[in-house]
Length: 85
Image 1 (cartoon, one colour):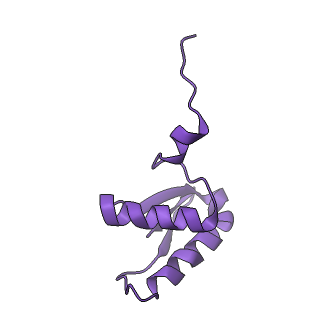
Image 2 (cartoon, rainbow, N blue to C red; image 1 turned 180 degrees about the horizontal axis):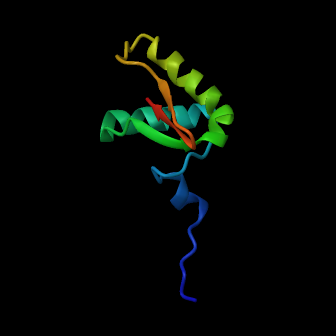
């Protein structure tokens, strides 16, 4: 029907998809925040538990020598959660 399929490389650079290892996702989110100002991500509430290691990794990166300000936090709603980097 004339649709276009996206390959894995196209999705990897998308700000709408989190794909990769814990470390690579953490670094990508921090780069997006620093370069593009993107610091909030909405995640379906059913994915919160699987995202917990990422939140912890982002929190750990804040206490490093770079001295990033602010906090990594969840804002939880009835059907989704927002991750703030």
